[in-house]
Image (cartoon, rainbow over all chains, first blue to last red; front, side, top):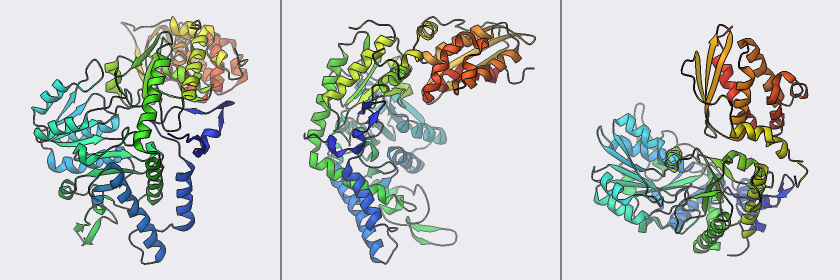
Length: 406
Length: 148
């Protein structure tokens, strides 16, 4: 993959007198000039509210917005752009499905299946649904190698769950789940499947049709696009049968005094003025990633993760969390008795930005038997030098806490 | 330190603080307590439970438990040393003083009544860590709010 660092203005600023080493892309990615420029260009030459204007500018803004819908569909292999619903992000997409599908599909006593490696955003909406519908929420456990336990998964499916949901890639462990296999098993059990793709779409080629997931969700801001835009990819037949999520403008066909009929897909699920700026930025991000090639992006990140695991393993008393084999560009660890927050503060003084805490995955933290971990995550702009800077900063933490140099 | 501690890190992680982190004083729970308050820092997951045994308006005994970073644990440990045997009103006055110190008051940082807790003055340079140092003191404030 070509060196892309010069495309990212923020990577050229300093932090505490050091080069910024940004290792928190699983939380949000930095933005290339191409995406920033696309947003500036949108407001400089195209801005108007979409879908209702008869004038030229409104038509062009609408065309730009809808063109991105088609680009998203192509990027993730969705057969029908009408099954691409723009949302604020992964969290809103999951809440939309839990709320709308849940209302018609989940009844008292039914089962919903989740896994123990979910981000809170793919857990709490199902907890809320289970509580509201008096349904059972079953959490599938993980193996000793931090994979979804297939035996436990099959047992959960014996309950004939109405909805099964799991993440494509763990934001803590880097585990890459066998989505196609898990989906097929869930379909055989009669379930509808939602896959949380927040940590997958930015980092590897994804083909939603090949995975056969009924719903597949992701966020733009974790893939070079602005915050506040994301997509729900749904099978149109399922989306058609679901009630609206939010009511308002844009999502209606005809409004009477006490009732209304609704717009066809995708607008039925896009009440209110959408985030057109965000969609335009997402389009630019997709073109940027396409030009790099998602196979190249995936290979770059996995090589960095391998290098990081290798280097980190040489640090005395450092514990790594996650599968032994192939994993995404996510590396969680703890170091001796140094609390992850202290680690994050110390490495920050060297310009190294890592995340410390429960990573919105408290059930998983309990299974790891830690209150928190430190986490470094990699993206297209990271280099081996970034890993080296992290390792050097961790040595500084060891020194400050009274451990001798290795 | 290689950078001459321009960052304030050496002060932040000085020996006294690490000693309280690794050997916290008054750690555990009280079987008989008058007040028990559990506080958490939801953004970072730190949790702390503070037990007070009051004898009239005197803090006869105190324990804390939970988990968190070196700053939150050391601060709670230092606080328990400081408030044990003090009148509730005195302890609350110390909490106010400590708060002032963490918000940069040089005068509060010189106040000997804060004892070893003055070692935490350097936290003021790390705004995102101030909440860590205040966790135990906030528990004290909450558990003694209705006291004379």
